[in-house]
Image (cartoon, rainbow, N blue to C red; front, side, top):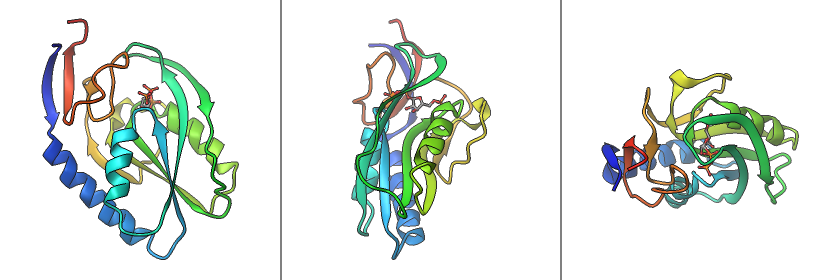
Length: 175
Ligand code: PRP
């Protein structure tokens, strides 16, 4: 097992997800909402968040790849799967697991905006604000952290560790 330190327990994540869902339900009440999960990292957060929201909504996914197999950003974003629902005139909420340099979201914000939604906001479980290279505003942020490579609850290192219910700081990835 790799060396890792607990950062956010499953219980802590669960209660924060509930709070985010309550805020989203309140803000979008009576509006047409499309929640778009960014694969792969957001799949667990998205699944928990949508189940905590008590209002009609549509769900879709989008996939880009910004990192290779390691932990350092390659600096480029590759678009691999588009959304399939029509979002013109609808309120879109992008769901992300973690915002780091901001490159992924800045690319996706432009791409989604071109499809003319009524509004576009971002919900991210974790905001690594201090690492930002491109300015991106996270409208709904679960937790803020300064540093550390996180795994679990959808977050990976070389496609490993996504299945942990808790979020850990990976101390020595190679072990
Ligand atoms: C991770 C994460 C975000 C992105 C954030 O995705 O899920 O999408 O990096 O980094 P950025 O703000 O520097 O762009 P990754 O490309 O590792 O793919 P994954 O979601 O499949 O893990």
